[in-house]
Length: 148
Image 1 (tube, rainbow, N blue to C red):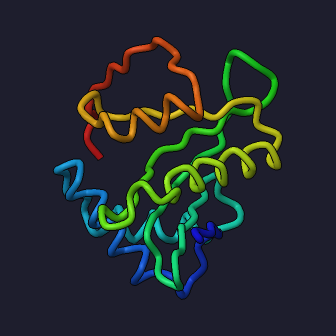
Image 2: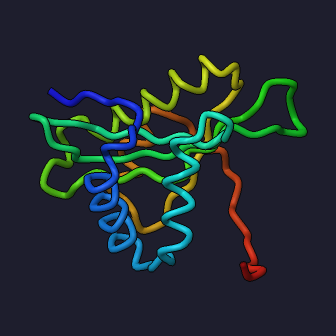
């Protein structure tokens, strides 16, 4: 049975392995400095950023990061589910669904009015899950890197 819990300081090595798996999946390389700062933010109660691990038989098999932030469209904050990754060996066993449910519960506890996220248009297997646990907004993302 998959359980989900917030990350804690002793989880770094397990979290890092999953974080690298996430980067491999999306074919990106996140600089070590950004990874180090991300980990510190996940552990800092003053930060609006949070992380959790999915655990199966004592092993970390998935991760999720989410960020609470203000929105111009509502009084309540929004929650952005930024990163979600489950080890390929255990996909289809409920870890992704449990990680999303964890974010829903955490966001509700923080008083957020909405949880949202993005995925790559080619991530069809994840989208099959997302279509069952959420609604497509119809918005298309645009972005521009500014450095830093």
